[in-house]
Image (cartoon, rainbow, N blue to C red; front, side, top):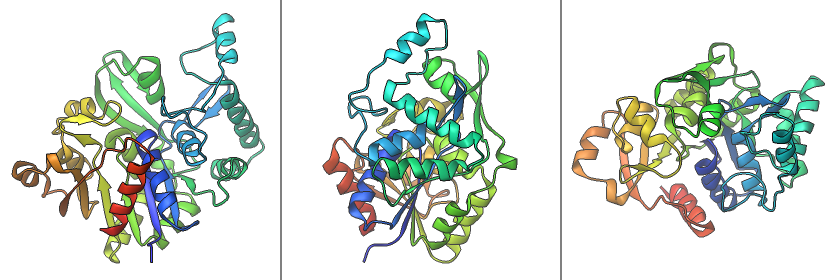
Length: 314
């Protein structure tokens, strides 16, 4: 019998593992706790990049080549934004834009972000609405760079992640509360997974919410296993700037750096077999109970399902 699973996830890497787990588990047994630190406002619209990548991936609507956005998208509105002198640095497709307009309208009517996004999930075919927002209150990842303080998306997309990051903080974390749905998912979880997402800017914003961190600690106390999947393989990030950010934080660019950043929260960390050396074990084991070798790179649908089943079998 499969366990009930809660998955902490960012965007692309998290979405791949979430897709594998959703296909490996019975309907309703997966809850995905989505990073809200990337959320931002543009053109007066509330945009939730990690939630929407998870949504499009799980609904089978995502662009496989880009890893984000809708397949078969068009860009007329984006071109018009540029023509009229409006910001065009964030690539909003025409059909994607409809989702943001509708979400923002619902939020202005007083609905909670979780409720709005779960309704969007159901409208796009995810009847169990497995994606939960870590918080309904604003929580924003803030980066200190050589070009000044920046929110995550203006840095990652607008500046193409070029300015070096010297500090990561989470504005609003002290006032943000875990949603009832997230707390219920963690309380009923029989296994908690941490996706191969950037530990500093995809997983850390979720854990910056004190109630979520406490709920994970409580779950471990009652015997629930917390297992992470490394986003670093052979000294490089599988996707995005996690390797540069670990180095800038003074952490090893390896699964040991991931374990150190998430110190004391995991029972095990799944790492690519090539990385499991005696030196890595010595460096990581003060922070994680056990390192487990596996094949964690997800190149296609089969890899996603294989990794999900491998995790469930541990």
